[in-house]
Image 1 (cartoon, helix red, strand yellow):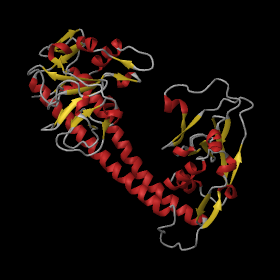
Image 2 (image 1 turned 30 degrees about the vertical axis):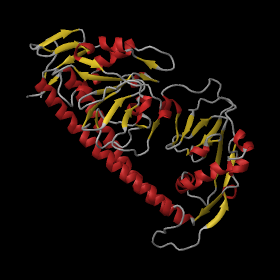
Image 3 (image 1 turned 180 degrees about the vertical axis):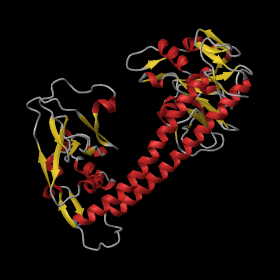
Image 4 (image 1 turned 180 degrees about the horizontal axis):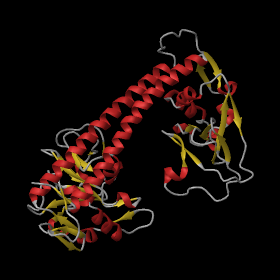
Length: 430
């Protein structure tokens, strides 16, 4: 690859920045046709397995949450909702074909505006573009298949989209404004090479993600066995004891009365306690923290009104943190390995217990408070066996973390390379 700097020979200045001389600049409406879309809501769709006459529908929510890459292989994707009643379509739809783009026209934040996918391997599947989407088709020979979605990953194009987005709680872009957006158009031969390079990165990312998914599934199965005593590790046969949580733990109610400058934590369904500002990216708590509860290092905390979702965590981030007054904080005694206990409290069986204890109307209004939580029974092995089980899962978590870090590196490297390739700052040799 050859790096081309600004103001160098073979580089020209355009309204979307410096690009190679042999690249063009076009507005979206000049090179793409906008196809007809439908406005069916999720309530009008079905995920049931129908017949070959069924019509598949891509909803804007699918683009935001289900599809992870710029290319969507329709033949492999099982998540597409299907339309039950064809009579819901008031006019003959524009069925999508290979190379068509489907783009979300709305998002709750800027980053999701105009997220798009390019379709491949549509074959004979009847597929239409659904609620809050644009469907774009190359007007003829401007782009190769496999490259088109990358056009909207160019940072200057993204900034242009942000500038024309409107809305308050939900941000959106109109078809007229999107049509006016300028995009760079490399030669077809260079498009093909860029697409090939980026697809190699996608393949590496997908393989790593698949491996992570398998490891997480294996871990979940082992947790169901080892944390319930159904399977025992070598060297252990002593019977587990059944105790109430209140027999092995004590509630902690100290508040931040001195208004110390402590960091606020939030409890999440999957990750437990996290730094609130880092997790949400903004401040979601008030200025007065004097009534917030203190969570010392080595203590547990759960969201009293949302524990039925599994929102319980172990504080190992700092010496002292704060949680909302609506949280419950507790500490286990010396008979408990906290790493074992945290995993036990996050199992499906325990979450079911939380849900069962919150099912009554009185409990529902107040959440799962300590006086009820402490009555929940748990089965506990000896401290030695708890420790060995915890160390076993620590090693699995270390392996998972290694691959997750590698995955983030791949994504970051791809993102950086993509911006170099899509602006022509790095040229590929064709």
